[in-house]
Length: 71
Image 1 (cartoon, helix red, strand yellow):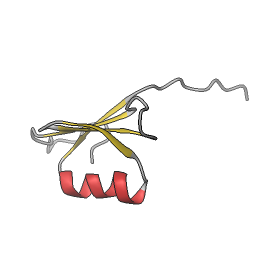
Image 2 (cartoon, helix red, strand yellow):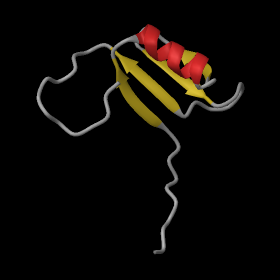
Image 3 (cartoon, rainbow, N blue to C red):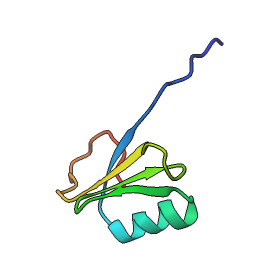
């Protein structure tokens, strides 16, 4: 089977528990907190690198069955 790699540069996830997400991405995975606002956390692999992961907080999670990745 011939496969082609994905060229994903950024991922944005909606999250609900800021404290739990921060612990997971910083303490367990070792990601670097590159940017922080009232409603977002953005992570890079290392200091001085551009963030590749953005977590958005706030809003309401849908109670309906939908496709997607929710933290």
